[in-house]
Length: 126
Image 1 (cartoon, rainbow, N blue to C red):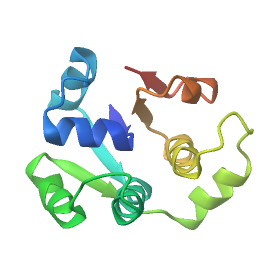
Image 2 (image 1 turned 90 degrees about the vertical axis):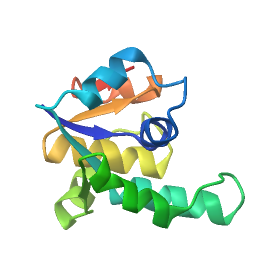
Image 3 (image 1 turned 180 degrees about the horizontal axis):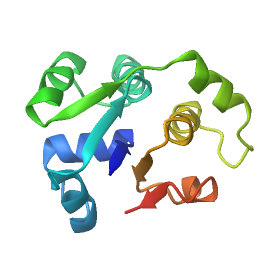
Protein backbone atom coordinates (compact mmCIF):
# COMPACT_ATOMS: atom_id res chain seq x y z
CA UNK A 1 0.00 0.00 0.00
CA UNK A 2 1.19 3.54 -0.76
CA UNK A 3 0.81 5.84 2.26
CA UNK A 4 1.23 9.59 2.35
CA UNK A 5 1.74 10.58 5.97
CA UNK A 6 0.36 13.84 7.34
CA UNK A 7 2.82 16.31 8.86
CA UNK A 8 1.91 15.55 12.46
CA UNK A 9 2.20 11.80 11.82
CA UNK A 10 5.72 12.38 10.44
CA UNK A 11 6.74 14.43 13.47
CA UNK A 12 5.25 11.93 15.90
CA UNK A 13 7.04 9.05 14.15
CA UNK A 14 10.42 10.80 14.14
CA UNK A 15 10.14 11.82 17.80
CA UNK A 16 8.65 8.48 18.93
CA UNK A 17 5.74 10.44 20.37
CA UNK A 18 3.11 8.55 22.35
CA UNK A 19 0.41 10.35 20.31
CA UNK A 20 1.19 8.04 17.39
CA UNK A 21 -1.39 5.27 17.59
CA UNK A 22 -0.44 1.61 17.43
CA UNK A 23 -2.40 1.30 14.18
CA UNK A 24 -0.43 4.17 12.61
CA UNK A 25 2.84 2.70 13.85
CA UNK A 26 2.04 -0.69 12.34
CA UNK A 27 1.02 0.82 8.99
CA UNK A 28 4.24 2.82 8.75
CA UNK A 29 6.43 -0.05 9.96
CA UNK A 30 4.95 -2.64 7.56
CA UNK A 31 7.75 -3.36 5.05
CA UNK A 32 5.31 -3.84 2.14
CA UNK A 33 3.95 -0.30 2.55
CA UNK A 34 5.64 2.53 0.64
CA UNK A 35 5.71 5.62 2.86
CA UNK A 36 5.74 9.08 1.30
CA UNK A 37 6.33 12.53 2.79
CA UNK A 38 5.03 15.46 0.79
CA UNK A 39 7.09 18.53 0.14
CA UNK A 40 4.00 20.35 1.42
CA UNK A 41 4.68 18.82 4.85
CA UNK A 42 8.33 19.86 4.74
CA UNK A 43 7.26 23.36 3.72
CA UNK A 44 4.74 23.46 6.59
CA UNK A 45 7.39 22.37 9.11
CA UNK A 46 9.81 25.06 7.92
CA UNK A 47 7.19 27.83 8.05
CA UNK A 48 6.00 26.82 11.53
CA UNK A 49 9.60 26.61 12.77
CA UNK A 50 10.37 30.06 11.34
CA UNK A 51 7.41 31.70 13.12
CA UNK A 52 8.00 29.87 16.40
CA UNK A 53 4.96 27.58 16.31
CA UNK A 54 7.17 24.48 16.15
CA UNK A 55 10.61 23.54 17.35
CA UNK A 56 12.10 21.53 14.52
CA UNK A 57 15.20 21.41 12.37
CA UNK A 58 14.14 20.78 8.78
CA UNK A 59 17.61 19.68 7.71
CA UNK A 60 17.61 16.98 10.40
CA UNK A 61 14.13 15.87 9.38
CA UNK A 62 15.09 15.61 5.71
CA UNK A 63 18.17 13.56 6.66
CA UNK A 64 15.99 11.16 8.64
CA UNK A 65 13.64 10.43 5.72
CA UNK A 66 15.84 7.85 3.94
CA UNK A 67 16.88 6.38 7.30
CA UNK A 68 13.19 5.57 7.84
CA UNK A 69 12.64 4.41 4.24
CA UNK A 70 10.40 7.42 3.57
CA UNK A 71 10.22 8.77 0.03
CA UNK A 72 9.75 12.44 -0.77
CA UNK A 73 6.71 13.41 -2.85
CA UNK A 74 7.27 16.64 -4.79
CA UNK A 75 4.36 18.93 -5.62
CA UNK A 76 3.55 18.59 -9.33
CA UNK A 77 1.33 20.71 -11.57
CA UNK A 78 -1.29 17.93 -11.62
CA UNK A 79 -1.47 18.11 -7.83
CA UNK A 80 -2.26 21.81 -8.13
CA UNK A 81 -5.03 21.06 -10.61
CA UNK A 82 -6.45 18.42 -8.25
CA UNK A 83 -6.29 20.98 -5.43
CA UNK A 84 -8.57 23.27 -7.42
CA UNK A 85 -11.23 20.56 -7.65
CA UNK A 86 -11.47 19.85 -3.91
CA UNK A 87 -14.59 20.82 -1.97
CA UNK A 88 -14.10 23.28 0.91
CA UNK A 89 -14.32 20.77 3.79
CA UNK A 90 -11.10 22.07 5.34
CA UNK A 91 -9.30 25.41 5.14
CA UNK A 92 -5.71 24.43 5.99
CA UNK A 93 -3.76 24.83 2.72
CA UNK A 94 -1.16 22.20 3.62
CA UNK A 95 -3.78 19.58 4.47
CA UNK A 96 -5.68 20.40 1.29
CA UNK A 97 -2.50 19.84 -0.74
CA UNK A 98 -1.98 16.46 0.95
CA UNK A 99 -5.54 15.46 0.03
CA UNK A 100 -4.99 16.61 -3.55
CA UNK A 101 -1.75 14.64 -3.81
CA UNK A 102 -3.25 11.50 -2.27
CA UNK A 103 -6.25 11.69 -4.60
CA UNK A 104 -4.18 12.29 -7.71
CA UNK A 105 -1.47 9.67 -7.16
CA UNK A 106 -3.59 7.72 -5.80
CA UNK A 107 -2.39 6.77 -2.34
CA UNK A 108 -3.84 6.65 1.15
CA UNK A 109 -3.41 9.65 3.43
CA UNK A 110 -2.57 8.64 7.00
CA UNK A 111 -3.77 11.33 9.40
CA UNK A 112 -5.18 12.01 12.84
CA UNK A 113 -7.20 15.00 11.56
CA UNK A 114 -10.85 13.91 11.64
CA UNK A 115 -11.90 16.70 9.24
CA UNK A 116 -9.85 15.17 6.44
CA UNK A 117 -12.01 12.06 6.54
CA UNK A 118 -14.73 14.06 4.75
CA UNK A 119 -12.71 14.12 1.53
CA UNK A 120 -12.16 10.57 0.45
CA UNK A 121 -12.15 6.91 1.28
CA UNK A 122 -8.39 7.17 0.69
CA UNK A 123 -8.02 8.87 4.08
CA UNK A 124 -7.03 6.55 6.92
CA UNK A 125 -7.84 8.10 10.28
CA UNK A 126 -5.60 6.94 13.11
